[in-house]
Image (cartoon, rainbow, N blue to C red; front, side, top):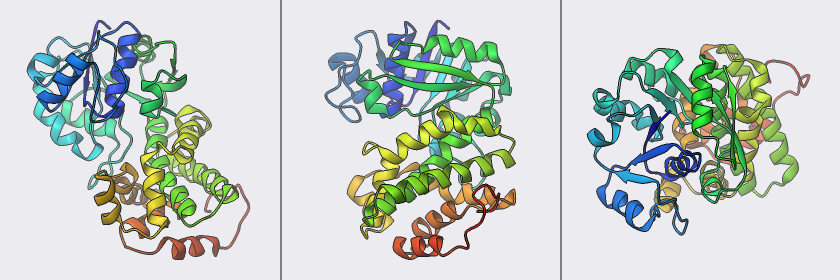
Length: 336
């Protein structure tokens, strides 16, 4: 890999651009707004998403898609999940035909219930062997501060996975290879929904026992749906499963957990969005994830709880009582 372009100058796209640059990869960050690209080039800072963090001088930014994507070996997509199809369709003719496409996104597309790699393959017309997922416990601000972290680089072609692994192995960011694209991608999407439930419990005043119980049962729920979709069970015990779930459910930097806390304190979805000016990915993907669970005949009570709160306007305390009122079964049963 000689040239990487990261599409999307949000917090994770910017942090991963730094990772690539620190790993010695020639990296260009493609921003939507020229003023943001100029700030990164001149002040070496992303004031909108990672303020007060100095970016490497070697990292360059542009808002010119044609100039930015020309000659790219690696195109990393870090745009909002529900915007991916439209954005990728607009730039697909600019992406070199041999470029590897990498997804940093963690969500399910509304309306189609497709994972992000499925959208990428459909819109960009790429074989599965040229599409990669990077997932794991990767809170953007901590990585931008160069705190140690690990992730999974998933692709059906291990040679491609190794190329991407080498491109982002920066020392503080340690990537591991995996061939289970479905598992790594699905774990990253559903953990956002579980984090919303953990946040609601926290906002309601519940403590560590409750949070640990939701995280553990949430992992079981993720794995059951994922395996039904063709993922490997052991993937969910790794970085893209348990690792990502723990980080997202535990950290105050987690947008999904914080969003859930506000819901638990009595705010509506609209009020939280107005307060933060952001929408948590789990809010947008929860309905699609529940659709997938129902399609594959998998019971998903925590996801169902979240959907009833964020989509149907039910009160978190009522949904928590409903969840606790379910008949307890064997811990390893497949339906609870």
